[in-house]
Length: 345
Image 1 (cartoon, rainbow, N blue to C red):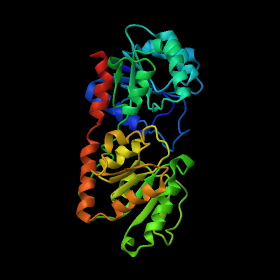
Image 2: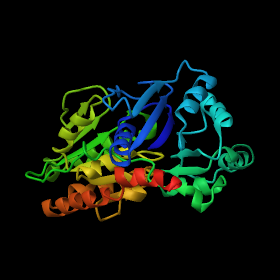
Image 3: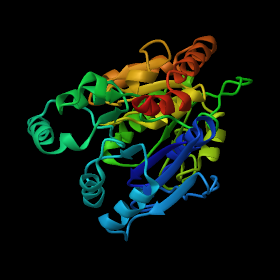
Image 4: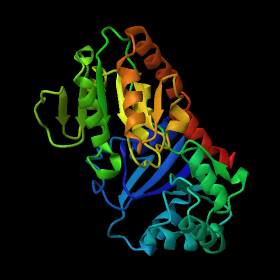
């Protein structure tokens, strides 16, 4: 039996799906630590995993010694830490590092080459790198960072994040719904006003009267006279229902380290309109194939790309939607689990 410890800030739906895959298909036993529950998301974890194979621990009030003792008793072959920003977790590493346990650090930060990152990479190389055997990255931009901070090519594994593809399933298109959906926080870095303002601008033209826009993640409001509706945060099941009545997913972020939501909506077969600053675009987006990329700082360019989508024929839109479904298969729970387990095989 393979024993794995996960040290996370918070448990999320996609991590639960990964654990299920590791347990059911790879004969794994898991000890899962979460600093806090429900601090950064609306997700409430309902633990229905096999208690003989999965132990869930909220570590908020535990000392590093408490965590170390539980890990030593468990005796894992893999220990994964989601980042190096938590003092109690990092103190744990120095006390349990041994040749029988491979320590893996997760990384979703993009490499920008800034002065701050360059200095940080030097600090990591000299003071922190020795704690870790492998780096698990989400995508191409994160691979660049892993190399910059000192990991060899053979020490880097891919596919850190994977959507729960069982919950985000594509259904055959029976009716084309000309609705654009955005899902995420209503925050400045999400650049949501770019989408709203450009959509309003195009809706003035009567040929786009059938198009609507749904914003998910803020306060619920009524549909306004521009065809825009607002919904609060929704569960995965609720999002799936909304997605079946949409044809395009838009993420106009000024900066998005990864953006798992892109994988979720490609899996459900939506065409994409995605900022080039979104990390997941490197895996699930091919410009002109399943949607369009754009510079989030260039409103004119965005409006042109949005109009391309809204001006597409039904057959062109359906083709892009089907292409998204194909690209969503690039990463699966199977490949995510296989990448992690490859370090001990």
